[in-house]
Amino acid sequence: MPPVVTDAIVLHAFDYLESSRILKLVTRDAGVRSVLARGARRSKRRFGAALDLFAQGTAELHVKPGRDLDTLAGFDVTRARPQLAATLPRFAGANAIAELTLRFGGDDANAELFDTVAATLDTIAASMGDTAREATLAGAWRVLADLGVAPTIDACAECHGPIDVDAPALFSHPAGGVVCARCGHLARSARTLPAAARAALRGWLDGAAPLVTLDANDARAHQRLLREFVREHLADDRPLRAFENWEQETLMPRVAGGAA
Ligand SMILES: [Zn+2]
Image (cartoon, rainbow, N blue to C red; front, side, top):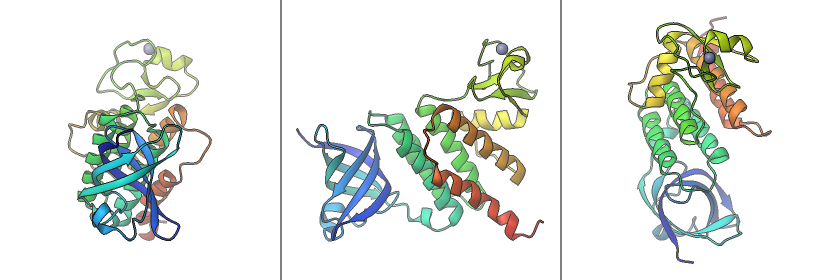
């Protein structure tokens, strides 16, 4: 089989045996892949300056049908993103995005997912302070959309009836988005989504709106909504540790500030 040459981003990396590394990549043309980079800790020439977390470049993969682990023949790094490791909010957010992508991305080609991950990591890398959290929220919802589970925002998820843009709406996770008052009565569970929160969600899903700035309470409500939606529509039984760490991390400044 000829090698697969594709754009790729390192989303997880660990050392393997004496000189190698095992990487988990999201790729443009071959979905999510686990790859063995033989001799990666010795051969800078073959694998570029660094096969570090969140590095992006052109990967050459040898894929054997029926094998879980591909072989990485080369990785030409074009973007290293060291800024993601510079602050905890950035690093926690980038790891949450990586975890969602690796867990649910699958091995089918998904160019939209690749582009979303690349753009989200760039936005998080450039973020200052709390905007890392908003950038992560925005990126996570777009990852979900690229995985085919975007929430319905502008019409009732059950009956497709119109829903007033400027009013609070009921959001039902089982229904997959906002529901009208009539369908909300029948929903197993629904929480109220203020108009501003719905507008933020719409902007993030569109990818067009500039990032909003959320106060701590709103940010936590958005994180909870995202977590519940992931659990309803994607999650298996395994915990999403990076996602949990990200939620915990964003609580820390408030605790450290002595708000209690
Ligand atoms: Zn309805």
